[in-house]
Image (cartoon, rainbow over all chains, first blue to last red; front, side, top):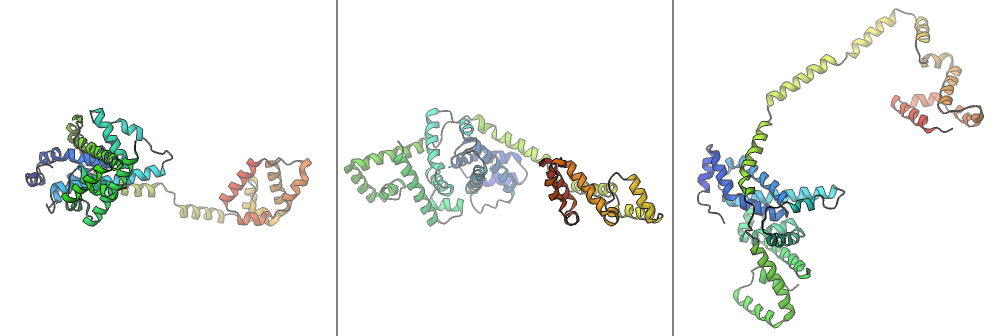
Length: 183
Length: 198
């Protein structure tokens, strides 16, 4: 988890017109944004598109940010929302396209991961994640990758803790079923 | 699916429950096999949490964003320009669209200077198209035969297949002409022309 101690100062500097403060915020959180978008979408190109969208939203909305939540939670909230919207748009495109999964093979080829073994492991995980509903995927990712508590996830997603627990249990059940049956 | 396995990997067991369940796993080879699969999967998740990546991507992220931001600013909406464009469009429309009322009025003034017979004669001599209104009143038979001729010609009807053409004779042209507008007539004409019935 990134050090959140100087977030307030950075936001204040940016609000006062210091553009480099925004760059510092991006440098601090860019990996988190990318990897959350990447795990949600399952490929690099889609994640890259979401990252650019998130940065734009941050740039435009940061001036109105009142620290009612932490900057970290706020950024995750934007990334999660953008990722879910992106997945919805992609799904619609797939439904109205005559191809089964347009450009999916092209998209898999472009990646920033260096190690082939890690790439393969990640591809296997992404395959499982892509088969569960996006909202269950979101909870699974925030819980297993970001080690967030249900209360923190509730802040990001705006959902009740009870609902999140149910989503997480369903996600675990489906993924473990796939793992069990996968040779 | 053993729900205790889900609880175990979801971290929702207290220490004593966990210990008890681990003993159960040790006693069951099939449960053990399943357990190993899940353990491997979750250890894969841990191994892929922070993978080594091409850092160029992250180095270029801010410059790329700044460049896109610059492009968006370049395309910024300017209300003054939009208003000016709208005003210009309205002026062009008023300048170039002909004033129909004025044309009709001028036409009526010209027609008023001539008698009905003079106008009919003029149209008969100068118009390449038959004057339908005149035909309907005075020479309906000729009008029918004229239309027949046109249709027979378009459909390639000759004396040999005149029997079939008699069917067309029975059509009520006036009713058709009254009920069909100009666009529909064009469509019917094109359809007939392309049909090549004979």
